[in-house]
Length: 377
Ligand SMILES: Cc1cc2nc3c(=O)[nH]c(=O)nc-3n(C[C@H](O)[C@H](O)[C@H](O)COP(=O)(O)OP(=O)(O)OC[C@H]3O[C@@H](n4cnc5c(N)ncnc54)[C@H](O)[C@@H]3O)c2cc1C
Image (cartoon, rainbow, N blue to C red; front, side):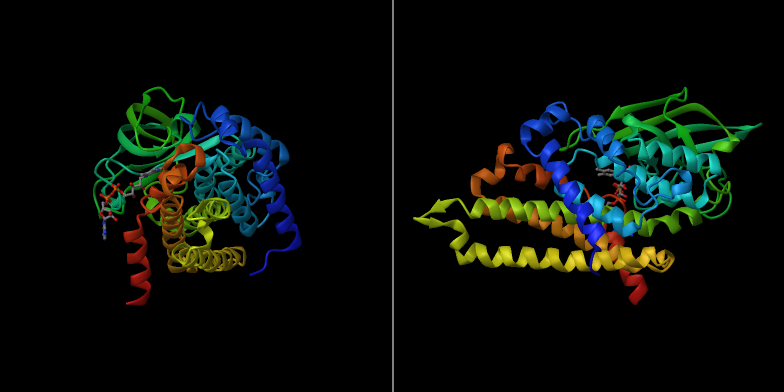
């Protein structure tokens, strides 16, 4: 699928923005407290002023009213441009669920927050419930007009900087493990909610979140009480494509930085880009990225045509392949840049660190393969 002239112009404009605002390591360090944070409020504010945040969200709630393909262009290009806004994608994912199942108030709040550069988070995983979310134990008990929530979530991206958590809780322990689950919109400022950073190989992104008698009104339920499983399953195709689009941009960036390097580094009296041992591998990387881009935009186009519910397998393919291409491209580029690939100054070590988590989150790639296999066998 070809991008339209407007979409190509949009992509160019984002590339220009990223080059200007966060093109150098010094700029990115200044925006992220020396590389210790993964999101910059300043960059989000500027993107909000340009009207680019929430480009695909419905106009009636304050969004840009564009297509999902437009959103993929935004995600791919901001990722390629190393814009420190990774939590935006988490909010965008949360928005899909609110838009499908939430109340008018919830939709307005979430969309207006995202377009203004505020962040939203999703709290599904628990210490005992990762791939198998049916194991969720965080308890939500109805108490008059309220719910009282107790328990723990873990691995919650951006919880420490988000306005709300979209929380998956267990309201009922009778029935099967997929019954009795309820989604709740919980403001992060609610008393009884505390967090702790999980230290990882990346800047501060993920958190443990603890709930001690956290009280929210019944109006905080998103969709149907005890109906969360069905609701969540319907939002996953877009979540996978959001991760795929960001990974595609990351892969493209790694390839471009590698190309710039092999075009100027000389050894044995010649450019290292002239060695066939490197040239053929670079050709393979470029081919993988080109195929992935075609496939991803084709699936995104099907989302715009209203076929989202039929895209479980294709979206799993896109997530699995794009995240693996991003990881492989960064690792290969590091190797082909020699010692300089390992140095922070040249950026590839950051690309490697960033490429390791996406095959794990948003449903591990083993789970994506299960989804694909289920559609085949
Ligand atoms: C950086 C990061 C950000 C995250 N952000 C969020 C967030 O914002 N919100 C949130 O709720 N969660 C988030 N997560 C959690 C993430 O979704 C889980 O880590 C992921 O779903 C896997 O769960 P787990 O870590 O418990 O691994 P497990 O489920 O214990 O899996 C361990 C291994 O077993 C494999 N495995 C498990 N079941 C099967 C099976 N049936 N078939 C084959 N293989 C299987 C897995 O693929 C994996 O390799 C994040 C995680 C990371 C690392």
